[in-house]
Structure formats: C-alpha cells, structure tokens
Length: 178
Ligand SMILES: [Zn+2]
Image 1 (cartoon, rainbow, N blue to C red):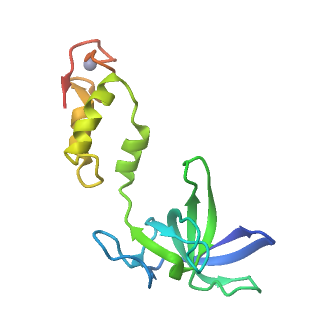
Image 2 (image 1 turned 180 degrees about the vertical axis):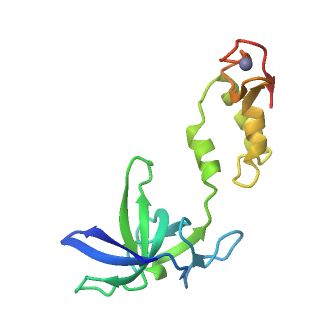
C-alpha cells in the first residue's frame, strides 16, 4: 500500500505519496553486484546535481514517489531516500532523481551491524588484517570473520572475544574460538 510522508525541502514541506515498487535507474552501474532496479531497502549512491560535478551522497531506498504536492519541480517517479552522511552521524529523508543514481546494491544489514558494532580490542586488532587480506570482511562471507572474532562457551553461546583472555563473561569458564 502506498503511504504519505512530508519531505523537507529548503522552502518548506512537500507531501508525497510513496509506493514500494521498484525504480529503474537508467545511469546506474551494472558492474559486479550493482543493479539498475532500486528496491526498498537498497543502498544507492547518487549525485545531487544533474551535471554530476559534486561529491556523491548515499543512503537507503524507502520507495518511489507516485504523487506529490511540489508545484515547482515534478518529482513524480523520484526515489525517497534515507540519506546518511559520510561520517555516519546523521540521516534525513530526501528525494532523488533516479537519473542521478550511479550505483545501487542490496544491503546485508547483518554485515553492516557486524562491521559497525565491532568492539575494537586486542584480539580484534590482531585478527582484522588477516581477515581483510583473506577476503572475509565482505557481506557475502563475513560469517567466517565472526567465527574468528567471537568465542563460544558451550553453555552460554557466542560473544565477542575480549583481548587475549578467552573466558566466558557469564560463567568465567574457558571458551573456545568459533
Ligand atoms: Zn559460560
């Protein structure tokens, strides 16, 4: 079902009706896992100016505008994007012309969670260079990285290793890698 939302744009709010249907991206890359059909939840990289002269922005696709109240620009067919800034400290909703999207990929949210939630400690720092070199820090292979960076207590399950000391934080017993 389409839903309505107000999107802020310099001079005021624009009310848009958003559909969750896929959006075709005529100028997006098709190299590797990149794709030309943006689906809800996907990650897109886009330019703000049509001449593509500025630095790219990025964010997650929320849907496609099928109706709007903007009387200055026709934004029908545009993507609604949850923009995230470069330092991952801020996000807000924007509309983006599909023609300005240069890349689109699906997102493995579990990998992002793993990567950004990683506790940096002695063990992690020692393992990361090798995991990186061997290609395990990838959204299609990171389970192996988890095995290396986490330890397991038979009784209490997996938890992130804390330095060299491999003991279970719950029972204090010996834990094993992966
Ligand atoms: Zn335990």
